Amino acid sequence: MTKRLTLLRHGRTGLAGRYVGTQDVPLSPSGVSQIKSLKNRFKHYPIDAVISSPMLRCRQSSEILFAQDLLSYDDELCEVDFGSWETLTFQEIVTKSPELVDAWSTLADDFCFPEGECIAAFVARVQRVGARIKKATETDIMIVAHGGVIRTLLCYFLNLDPSNYLLFNVQKGKYTTLNLFDEGAVLTGFNLGADCR
Image 1 (spheres, helix red, strand yellow):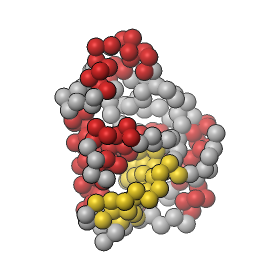
Image 2 (cartoon, rainbow, N blue to C red):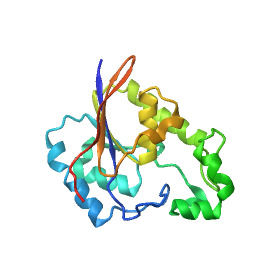
Image 3 (cartoon, rainbow, N blue to C red):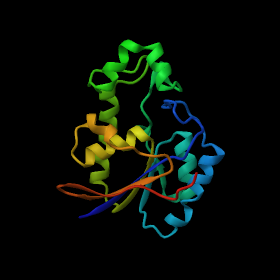
Image 4 (cartoon, rainbow, N blue to C red):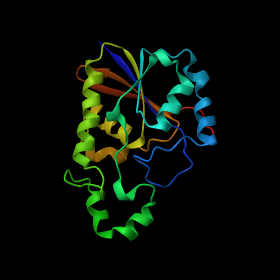
């Protein structure tokens, strides 16, 4: 049985260029407008279930677009915990922890964000979500989540090693579609949505 999976990244938060994981920040006014611009696109879009990260920016995005009776929340869809790097820019991270940046760039399984989550634990929980989606009885599923989560799900469904996650430049307020088959998945659309600046 073919399933269609849609992966929507939450809208803008006003913190572009900063690493935001567990900070529970809201959508910015621009992010709200960005998500509202998708409303017509999803009006007649067949959706059996919407599974969202419970973080505020994803909840807001979900609730703008979908009726409450379609929505459920899954803690395993939360973004990675960047620990003491939360809300820093890349340059600030390089300045603060230059000795850790190389290990981070290779995405070694044993890499942990300082005072935060280990990559292996993050990948494992996101892959558990992927396994549940494969077993779900619904045929049209929407996930509303974060950039790192969506990249990791794409690697999972396309049978790529998770270290390839940076191949996908997942943009805020855009959605990606896949057809899921027993043997694997086909990417059918990437970073779709209104070009709202």
